[in-house]
Length: 111
Length: 114
Image (cartoon, rainbow over all chains, first blue to last red; front, side, top):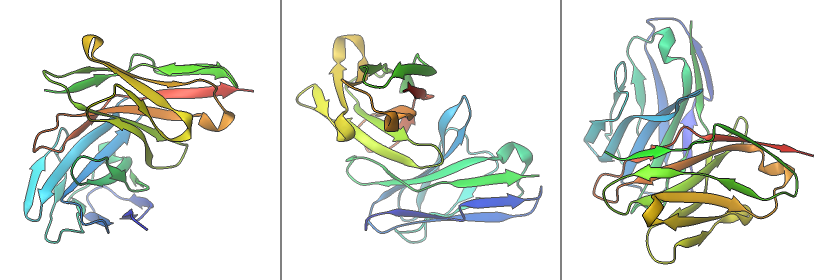
């Protein structure tokens, strides 16, 4: 089944403790992206990647890092999480703009 | 820069009534347009998309959308709403260039009354 898999689904962590949210797709898509969703703000793009080793900032990149060493994986790294990064995170992938496939989401709480 | 406006934050309709969710975009040329639905606690599911050609697009679950270039709009419609349509709906735009960036509106929450 074609899908985007994120892990974990839920995560509670403390301020300053580094964490990684993984994202993997099995559709051989070139493009991958991370979004965060906050009430009243909709979905905002954090980072995106056009292909392996090609990444760029989205609209709200501060406090986040990404890497794209393999085509299928696009992890989101929070080096020093803060409470304002409490949010619902989505990974998405696409090829040829036929539509974006989203993962099921990761709900992160930073206390 | 591309942007999307969904003027209605929350809409309530009765089951069986017709539905129209509004979406306006800002972009200098014809973009690629999408509608996604997010059920409570779920991810986003693609309802339909417009790239070119016929301006009336059919999607899944009985939804359709019409692209109107003159109004920079891409409104989503359904002739008869079901209780299971209660969800949040997002309109998205992509400029169609080598940048695959998808920009979303802030969403419209749909409540369906029995």
